[in-house]
Image (cartoon, rainbow, N blue to C red; front, side):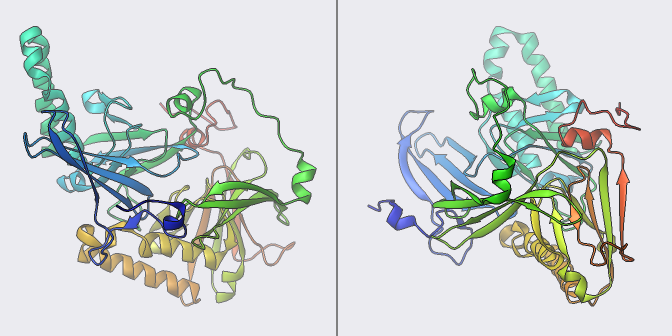
Length: 443
């Protein structure tokens, strides 16, 4: 019998990448009782990583006696700082094949049918859009025999609704699927990656107190008072350290935090984590100030390889655009970073090409592989100074920065534009009550 101990796992991640070439990707089998016939069946657990996403636990139960089976997925990662909402307009049958990670804390809605699956009423699932529709229909059909005996009229109405739900799979008309998850651990595939998905909208939101309570992040009796802050002068002069866990191997690690003044910009908080067990390193940047009154769009025309040495502060609310490549990266995709332009472009390549989960295994297609590899080659040309493009940082919070190498004089290759945030951008930033000049609620 294998014993899991700190000595056995330290320095090695329990969550393995799925690969046909690995011998250690076998699931763990546990004999357990079937909840249908109460005889013993088999549960299989697989701890794996979904690149471009996070660690998950996939479990599957099957009973050889009554043939009952059940599968579910649980997030093994941390609850994210913000909730996430995916809004997909399903236009073709190909959209039904999009892969979906739906956490058990997510709410699923189809506005056209006035249909909603509340949070914590279903187990988490790794499926497709079609699979979610089938699962919803199967859940409604499950208690229909009892309803027909007790309330025939209600059963008839539910039968009619099930037919409408199943008819959505024909995609005769467009419909909208909304997955809203306060934990931030749900995911919907973008098959057009690394290009922008015109049918899919991803927005982030600040959790309410009630949602924090549902996720177990605070007790019911917790007061909504802001904690007393640390002395700012102390933070400027010292490097603060606190204990955490490595995001890769989950071993104990240490995170250092420092308040830094960026010339010609503002103060930011830089946090760096180093794991002594697996060697993983990461850095993250948080704005040291409040959200600006207006958003900021910074456009740099990259004309020379020397531009790669420019310092870049990308806040977690900042999106990235490269119009010549028809590329757009959402604001939370690579988190907050303080690096060089070369480092940021390499992170983008790593995220969209090297660690993209849809370029390997059964999910990959030759057309998709060719597009991603071509995109990676274009990024390499930009880094080597062989391709002239416009690089855009679009931050509705106004907390991102791109170094002006001519400072204090204007940079002839860089423009900075201030703009009034839209209603949706204020929603994403948790500024629902903020009113600015030119701000109007969209109805």
